[in-house]
Image (tube, rainbow, N blue to C red):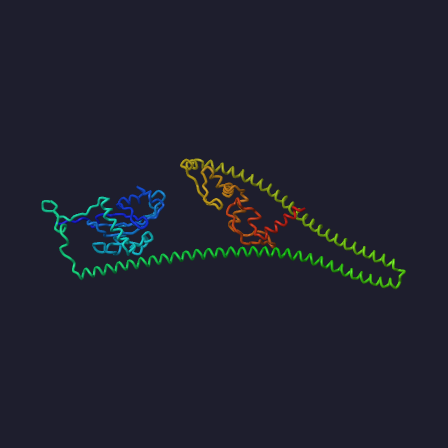
Length: 482
């Protein structure tokens, strides 16, 4: 009876460097690399194209799976790389004829298991440097280097002595009829063209997806820029409104001064008319000339005195108004400071009472939980909690009671700010809008740029829009002037 070798004589792994094969190894050795037993430092932080090749006992290719693999810094394949290469070849469709009929081929456009297609690649089908031509050229050298030899068919006699068969010594006794060979060649050509078509379609689809992704990214960037321009326009509009209000106030003052000047001009015209009448009467009565001259001089002095008095009164009125406004703001400020100090004292007293209660409660809790926490601390256990401003915060077991008593104060200490400052920043971080009071129990509520770090948050500035920051600055300048 006859015995033949296994249908798969050997399994090889071929790796490409740029456009040529530069590495060949046994599949078992590559499996050890994937399993983390032996790294490949030469390929650290690189993405490589490879081919899993099954050859029969005549060293002819019978199955190929084209795959890609990313290596990490140590030269190991990326975590989660688990492509079943031999299984893909068993399920794969037909590929080109490399000597003994069509091979089994698994590639990106012809993947029997769809979710593994992203880790496969399509071959180059045309030219002397096609993918399969490179594989056929690399097989003899790889087999010679790895010690893989061509197997021969043999028979066993009744005595158990193996004898080479004529089939191993001679060419095939039966040649396929010419029509069958032509039909096989045509079928093989159709399969090759189909594979090329699938490869081209896959490349076009990937190109279209990439262009769509790039266009979407550009659209997102343009939309972001548009939103920034809209915010800038709103900010400029608010500045313009503020300047317009100031301009209207100045215009009112100019109109008031203009009215005063008009009234003075009218009085002067009346005086000039009286002067003319007096001059006419003086020409008629020369004896009264000196009295008229004195009267004109008195009238002119009275006019100059009245003008200077009006100017002085107007300036004094403005100064008085400024002093009253400054005094009112100072009184309000002192009242607020006194109220704040009083509240701070109350808060400090309450904080002390709370701290005392917390300390007593912590002592009670620690007495019951000391043994359990000490066990956790002995095994090096920490607790991790997420808080805005610090991200994932690791809480040692020794500080766990402090954290449980007041998580906000604990996080504020880690951010190098006070608890009240952290709460103000957290309110701004969760809702970045202007909190300036505009009357009737309402706030401005304008959209602001979020301050991501508690230490960079300034109350009264970071939580105010440009318009209300300007108003506060003007008040502070008036107070400094006085």
